[in-house]
Amino acid sequence: MRLILRSDVRGVGNKGDVVEVTNGYGRNYLLPRGLAFLATDGAESQAASMRRSRDVKDAAARSAAEDVAKSLVNSPVKISARVGVDDKLFGSITTADIAAAIAEQKGVQIDRKQIVLSDPIRTVGTHLVPVKLHANVEFPVTVEVGSDA
Image (cartoon, rainbow, N blue to C red; front, side):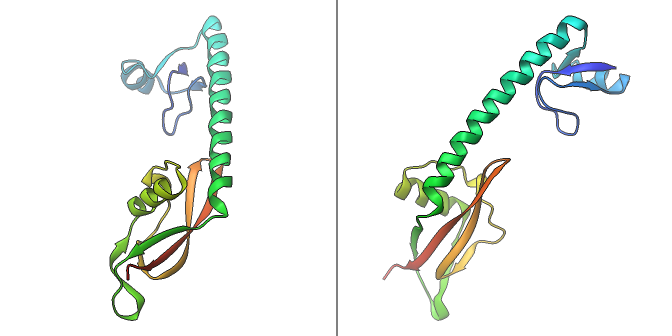
């Protein structure tokens, strides 16, 4: 069954793509939920305009993400926390703390889910934290953790 996707469907395709799916998947899942419509000749031209619109939005989002990356990559973000023995923190610095510090110090709003931190920061010092703002824009942010005192 040939369908045109109305929105992004994981594992199938993106908005505006003409896809070939099994009859049952299309009839029982994609069509009833409004995620796709049948691919006819007229509808395929509509799909092409949907793809062009998606590409324009994606280019604008990528450009905005690159601008934010340029402003954040060379200036460190400073976070102060309570420190115990051997420069270990009481608690930890999480992605939410880093996002709040970036918003406060740099004036840039970043969602905490865009900060890729495998484990919370638990020591004093300088840490490189990767941030992924867009599928093609990933950059490191320098986080300097110091003591409150």
